[in-house]
Length: 386
Image 1 (cartoon, one colour):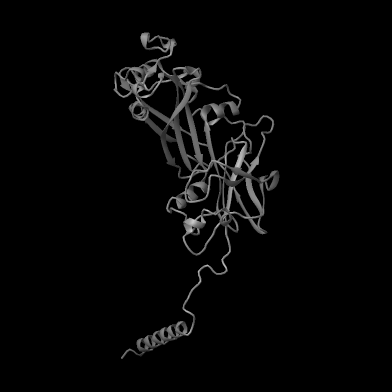
Image 2 (cartoon, helix red, strand yellow):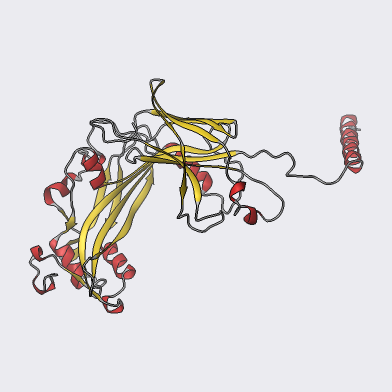
């Protein structure tokens, strides 16, 4: 006979009876909203190329009834008294400090939360002499202050790019300098679409590397003096870097056929657009996206949930609250070169690349879109001057 097992079962049974009896003698209603305290939720992503840095500061909320209803009430999300500063530090010493200023935006898209007006908090910074940046990407940053008397904060770093080092788009390994020499991009080579490859070295601190191509074109309408500028953005990809502090080179590929296919499917035929006379090609830009580690990990958590649920996140670097303080560089080639003191580069479509856009003879996607060619390309009767 197993006495130990019998005693163990007896003890378990006794505990169960005590627990059941305890609940039977108590009130059987649980108020899950009793004595709840609003928790700060802060979202701030710094870009050293921006003169205005923005922060979203709200509080968690809970209440009885439909949460989609009280999510539309501003008082459910705002703190009354926000006293917070952004500090820039080097070697532990504060080199800059800015008070967050309440700002109202008026164009928030409709969604789970109230709009179109919402509060955000901003700081406006200025470049120091000879700097390409509005904030120093080599510095450490700290958010510090109170929300309705409650202390909050957080320390973080952003994607680094040293002053004096060649800009991303002019770095030797990235080879964008070829556009400065040639001034054009070849998407059709002879009678075949070209496969473009970009092998790129991203700044230290980049956890997610991305690249986009932006194509600008202009539409001219009957009776209108000014052409209408439009853009199509092509996502060339996004890659996760294993070690953000020692980022290895990443490679992006872009199919020329995809360029024409996207334009063919995304732009109406000229015959279907009232009063449209012609479309003219404009410059091609490249946009770098470099995401820091903190933002990457927070984004991973955020993408696993949906709706207005405000569960405690699995990742946060906000002290005494939740959310993320991080960095991200989003900058076009022209913007970055000008910031670093280089002359801007205007990249245009090469001669036969533009010819295919106008005629669609090779791939058959764009012949009906009404594009005409620049006269300098000497393509005869398909130029815009005819």
